[in-house]
Length: 390
Image (cartoon, rainbow, N blue to C red):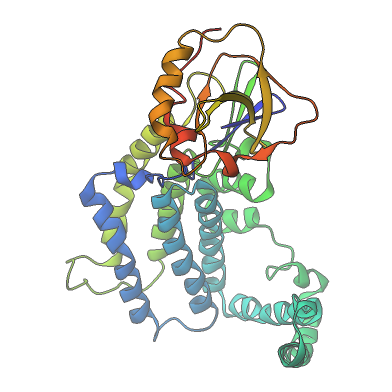
């Protein structure tokens, strides 16, 4: 956690910078976690069965959906609720679009025709071309030019047939809501809107990364453990609904389940996902207020001379400082505790963060980066153990 302008920033990528965090899946029932990790094999097996029967627009949408459901499960296991939310939202659109293209051959043709819009956009945008050099740049330029040229005729035909709005989306102006109403999917539309808040950066979508407590605001970086269970439940449920419209798959020889039955079983794991995410989430939110933006650091050098620094945590700088007022209670014991560490520091001083002391920077003295002075065990070893008196 780092204090910035009265707010607190917390990174849960590494609760201790030298130990990787444990994902929420580490708190789940091991049998469920094993099932979740094995589930992609069932999806892959089903995809090979669908390959011969799902072609054209339906096959394209199934490609989207199968990739996204695997991404969803991976993100949930890691506690990456934001990725999970965006992916679950996409699965709802895949469900809506699949039902639309399955409803008529004309809609399927319309869906496929939109690939020419994308090809034209890529050809005109020429993304990254300016950073390439020499042969690579020439080859990529020729590829994009050929891509745009091939797209022109079918694109113009599609525009004539579906209108100018076709360039903005394959449904040519028909909203997701309208399609959801048409195919009796409105019960899921409200959840789709909630998850869309992450995509659009709405204030209400900061469910698990921002918290207000009185005047204190905490911003957390990394896992969103409140979005993850929501995205899991809705994404898997929408995927299961799509499976009802897809050809039934054979029972997997190793699991004794078809994909529909396995997905029903997967969805019951929401209880584990929710509980594990909640337990980890409660651990990560601070309970005692923010750590200070700056903290006093005592450095004991090989010549047994002690010096004070002001550690600017946000900037990662140590500013030479002087102690203001009386030395903290227990100073002699603190120095005695540091003395055996001096010889282990390869010429560096042994250092210790000391809370509740007042030090002020010495004017004219240049700061040093924390990596030049502090050792990992010094930075993190004593912060909670040694506290001077106020």
